[in-house]
Image (cartoon, rainbow, N blue to C red; front, side):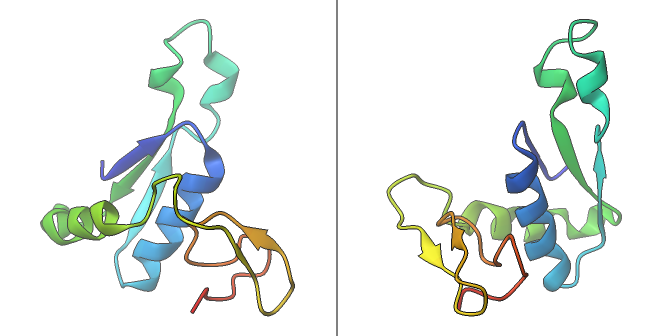
Length: 99
């Protein structure tokens, strides 16, 4: 497991970033919302897993380097004019790169 979070958009964003850099990843617990109450809320968070565990060190450095702090500024997509969180490298609406 390379990353876990309760917010589906954040997990999807990190998944997209890693895939764009050539890592094979998959998400676990996509439907775990239905079991909240039977397990702890933390155990139902989405989990992002690497297919090849040999990629863990490099992928971890990439995830750690992402700007996930709340002080970074949000940005507006140049393609569709949608507002995106600062931590998003790709537009959540159309997939356009922030750069």
